[in-house]
Length: 109
Image (cartoon, rainbow, N blue to C red; front, side):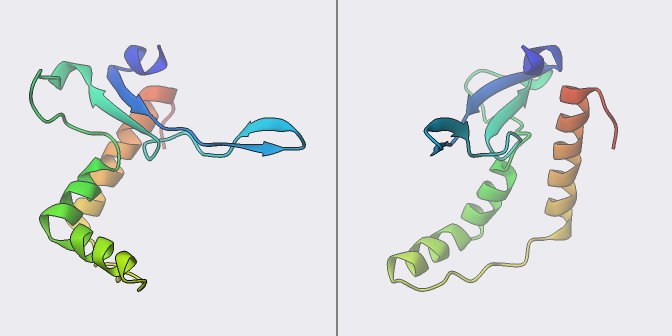
């Protein structure tokens, strides 16, 4: 309901839980790294959606061959080498995370 009221579709959500002192606890933060938000006003059936989450970074890593390099390094037991992320991508992701935060909470940063 919060996402809907903020103008988003909550496309999916991943939460991780743990056990502490025989109580089940949420062992994850709740933010754009754990869910996918799509703006309702831009939603188009059958098309790639504008994502307010980490999908922009995933897409960039895949398009630039880094995801395969990471997977290959891990498969061979090596530490993957992190690429330099372009500043325009960082700015775009930051803007989307801030926008999502502000719309969901009603607060400004």
